[in-house]
Every structure is written in C-alpha cells, then in structure tokens.
Image (tube, rainbow, N blue to C red):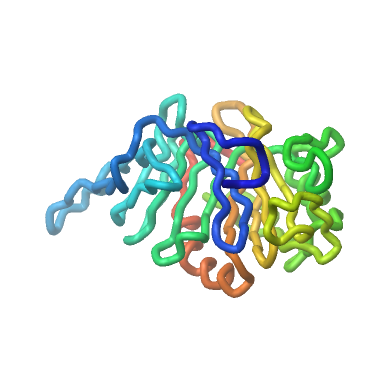
Length: 272
C-alpha cells in the first residue's frame, strides 16, 4: 500500500510498484474483474480494405486485475468516464491496462509489470516533500506546460536527467519533454518510503487531492506536456513513461513510442 496517503479507498487503490515508484493509481473500479479481461478485436476478412472499428478499452481494470489487450486499435470511449472522448490508439500484442477514467489512461508493457505508460489530463503540481507532501496544491505553479516544466526543473527534489526539449507529441501536437529522477538533495520526510529521503511527489488529480503520483529511489520518468483544445475547452495533456531505473526507461521507450505515435485525438482537437 502506498505511503503517500491514508488508507486507500476501495475505488482507487494505491500501490507501490517495483523499486518504490510511488504510484497512486488513478483508477475507478466499475465492476470487479474476476481475472484479467482480454479485449477482442473484430476480425477482418482477407483482402478486405475496411479497417475494424476501434474497440473501447475496458473500464473494469485494476492493479490487481489488469485487462489484457489484444493487438488492435482502441478507443478511450465516448461516455462520462472516457479519457479525451474519441481518442484512439493502436496497441501491439501483450500490453495491458490497469486504469481508464476521465483523467487517466494507463498501459503496461509485456514482461515489465512495474513499468507504465500514462496518459493524463489536467494534473496539478503538488508539494513534493516535507509536511503536507502530495496533498498540498502549489497555487504559485500554473497549469501551462511552460509553468509545470519550469517548476519541475527548478525543484531541488528532482534530478533533471534530460533537459526540456521541444518535441512533436501525440497527433502532431507540439509538446515539451523532460526526463526526471530523484535528486540526492531530496528530503522527503516520510519513513514509509523505503528510499526515504530520496522520494518526491509530482502531481495530484484535481478531483481528488488524496491521490497523487510520485517517484523514489532510482525511478525515472519521461514527461511530455502539451496544451490541447477539445470541444472548445483547453486541457493540459501529459504523456508519461515511467520505469524503475534509467536502463528500464530506455528499454521502455522503443516499446511505447509506436503506441504514442499511433494516437489520434478526436475530430476537431487542436493544439491549445
């Protein structure tokens, strides 16, 4: 159980992954998975030029029962619990998901259960260490990619592994990328972290400040941040790769990048 918060609710279990990547899993369990669920893709007959309709990612996935995803094209849904309604992406064989809600969609690579690819929306910067860590929103940090990147790269709790770089993000949207680890100067102040004091919190979900994302020890994260406008509303989009070590992050990158490159935002979505 994650030391980042009090007892985890049944609806959003917290869990420490691998070398204490302090994940607070932003998932809602809409039904109990009796085991992992395999999403199936409709068959296409030989010689057909018709592309199969994207399959909705299952909603009833969790850390304890991730949903196995058959190779194919998926939609993050169109309902109230959808992540960027109408977004699609293509997933190779062997991947799974533990979370799909309106603020998060996650993917787990085959053979690496502690690694993650996260898609987030509108996360908020939080106090990274010391009393009130994780649950204290930082009102002086704006919500724009520029403001968030500036905070991350000037925070002594984080080690900047790769400095901010302009990249082409999902669906051709311009994004800023940074790779972070934990600084030796970090003083988390929470003995529940096995790597205390080398732990730090980054973001919380705006609808539930008791759930936040953190890293610790040798964990590293690659964070792409962009502004998008969907249906006339502006959002901050995060695409995050996270792994236990630098070597694992380098191994995750070529596995995840084809999926990220396949992402198509809903019709009418533009760079914010």
